Image 1 (cartoon, one colour):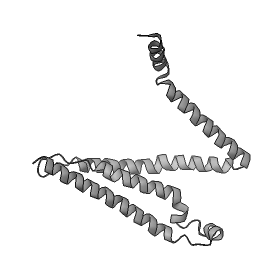
Image 2 (spheres, one colour):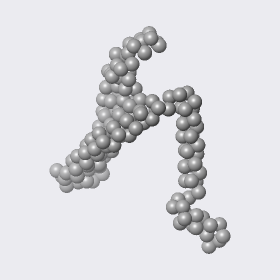
Image 3 (tube, helix red, strand yellow):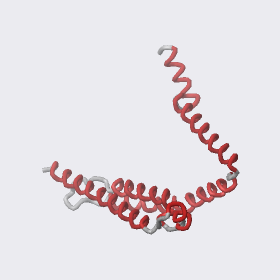
Image 4 (spheres, one colour):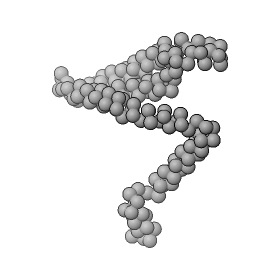
Amino acid sequence: MNRLGRGASRWASAYGAGPWHLLGLAACFVVAGYAATRMVGAGIWMGFAVWFVGAVVFHDLVLWPLYSAADTAIRSLSRLPSRLGRARPAVVNHVRVPAGLSCLLLLVWFPLILRGAERNYRGAVGLSTSPYLARWLVITLVLFGVSGLLYAVRRWAGGRSDR
């Protein structure tokens, strides 16, 4: 083994990952530090700290158990045997992806979807927030519809390849 290979091997055994991992981690800390200095400079650090702790607690105590239980239920349903004895494509990712995207949209736009920012939004742009809930529901239905269609195509294609 050459000298460079031994150095990389020694690095990986001492650190646990390659040097690019450490460089990426350092870059993340630089960006987080910059964001923290901007919040302190703007005088909003206390509100951000309360929001951050609340989000962590809400995620860990409420959301994590909910979507873990939902994922376990979906995975157990996908293990049910096929009527024809053929292997079926896993349904779990056809539910996870649209649900994740829908939840991400809800997380980003929830003040408008749930009409919590009606007064501020109307004052800023002169429009109502009422269409946001319907649009989010339509996007969610389309995401699940496309995912269901892809699942159906995969099941159909899997059935045809066995013949």
